[in-house]
Length: 182
Image 1 (cartoon, one colour):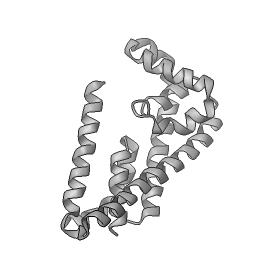
Image 2 (cartoon, rainbow, N blue to C red):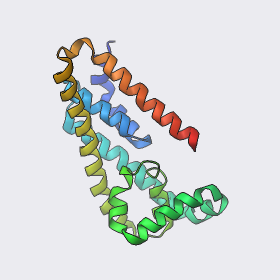
Image 3 (cartoon, rainbow, N blue to C red):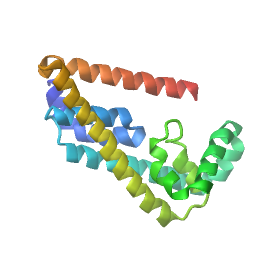
Image 4 (cartoon, helix red, strand yellow):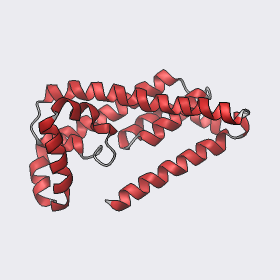
């Protein structure tokens, strides 16, 4: 099975799962795949929206049920949690809408918002807005990257597997470095 067929066949599932787990790299790659015609950009964004929304809702509910107890057991989380609680106190709506754009705070923030007792409906509505913005921005960045790549390189077909591979390696390196720092 060719890489193109793999992307066309399993790309949307990969976007959903990838954005549930972390997201930016997979979404940028999917945007690039959409530019190349292997995926449809609107469906990439829809899958990304649902992946990130479901993940954040899950962590919000975990934070609601276990947040305070988990924070008490993990003193290393205190610095980050204080940053999030301060942001949430000063700018509650902006924090909920924009947390997924804050590198290093994205995965823990919905958990902490749940622990802060923000009302469920408020979080859900603002989380939907944030998920839509995030899916459109990062999917669009990937698509535009494909546009720029084509303009600079010209015959993209010869180099597209290298570009996908390079972007995947850079994304994986960033992800590994991030997890090692934790």
